[in-house]
Image (cartoon, rainbow, N blue to C red):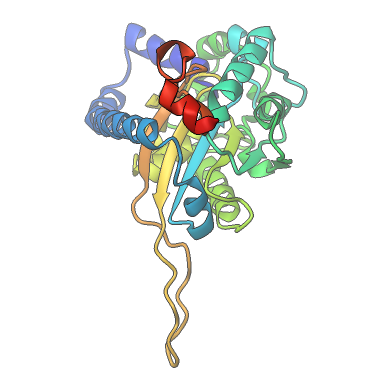
Length: 314
């Protein structure tokens, strides 16, 4: 279910009333969600300042030693079904609309300053089309990962949320508690388990590098953020992840230690506590200006080099 798909049932429940138990659960979880967003805001500002100062000058050393790994979780661009609040689930052939293509192109341009090292995508068309924009101009092959597919919602796929909310008690029960589902429909814990397993499997590969991108869907991105932030799976739906947005998760990895004679080898690449840098960030192109080439660093305002610099260049 997309972020748009989540808004409708939530707003309807708040307007028309809900059970005291559901309201209590929502209120209890709200402080934790606000705490996560506050922490993300602080880390995001710090990250932006650090990036602006260094402009990824340490990227090569990061790639070489793998001291850090930043996961980029991208939600696909907008589709006509998003606009219609129609549930796509895992149905094939749901493509980006014109707005979605523009969103994906804008995101790809904004991320050109980040040294993306791998692109792994859900095989569904809307995700693959978004991944194709990210891959333009990069010597990267899009790797398909079925475990990043959207939630399997069974017979609800293709239906409009508003209509389901009016006539289907099973749907309303599922939106209230996605840990329980009818036969043929995935629960949130099931989706989270497969998505996390896929991301962990891919990021441990040495050829994936320090900045892998995972292109997926709203539910999948929310559940991955929930996992790495420690948010309960039942509250993941409250996170906001817009179309063609990126969530950043930084993992600080343990240093590989030399194995002394008689000692057992330790598992490499064990991460410290993940840091959520951004949730549902939609960067604009030009958010980070590339550094001037060496030949232009000595130029003054207006692009006019000083006489001393000209003499040195001569």
